[in-house]
Length: 349
Image 1 (cartoon, rainbow, N blue to C red):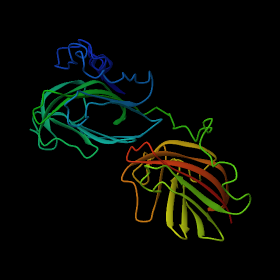
Image 2 (cartoon, helix red, strand yellow):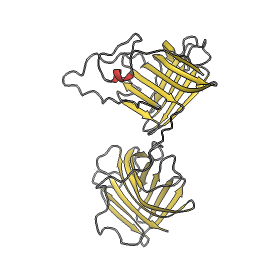
Image 3 (cartoon, rainbow, N blue to C red):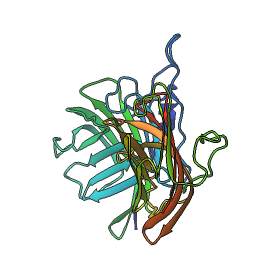
Image 4 (cartoon, rainbow, N blue to C red):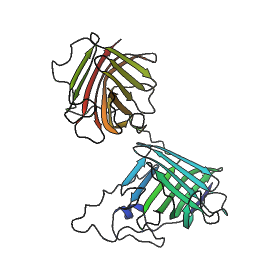
């Protein structure tokens, strides 16, 4: 086992505390708190004491991080770490998606602890100096400068088992920086939680608006909702063709009637079937966080570009890979709107 370590004086949590945090490597947070009249600083996010995580702290004015502070763990994202000789690649697929490339100078054949300065954008860097690149969410630097600090790195029989890496990146010569800390532990067995118990007072149709026994799809749209147009809709087997299909961990609902609709309800990436429970903090399927699941309700020529919402599986029955019965509720808010579309599906084969 090979374990080389260089202590770094400044943890990233000092940076995002927005205090007077400086060190010998040029990592520095703002010297003072916000001036009078300016918005308050973003919240401080504390990484877990154990396990893998990626912590990003973007100063206001940094193009890539857009001034946000973001934390990812194996409980809420898919984190992939790949080593190729002296290059580390980090991919995040979560509420946001990111890719990081960290290339040491060509005098190194593997990752080693140390400070690597005067870096430019990978893969257009000087091989003798090294390079880096952190990009994602449709944003990337044309040119950049930065620093990598590998605080510690451990290999076992040539395989990476643990690394702690910090970086600083300035896009297009900007003073404002994106700071990052990557801690990856191959022994981290953290898994995402499954569906939660539905919160109290979650939306459900008012009494009497849905049939007592037959299959139905009920939709109610608030005034500013783009998809439903502020109207209410009720479909039964007598007024529309209602179809329910299961594909792996996703259920698709189709309605063909006076209006045509399609709903997609995707479970978490480790599920092969939807399970009863609450699926919250969701984004638009299929551009969702795979660890949380996603949804989309569209039709009549209308669909959300982006959305947030939830769905609840009150009950579901499978026969093999096919759904034979389901009771499901959902809420969908298009493009950050405060008015939403709410729906309930009751279907038995």
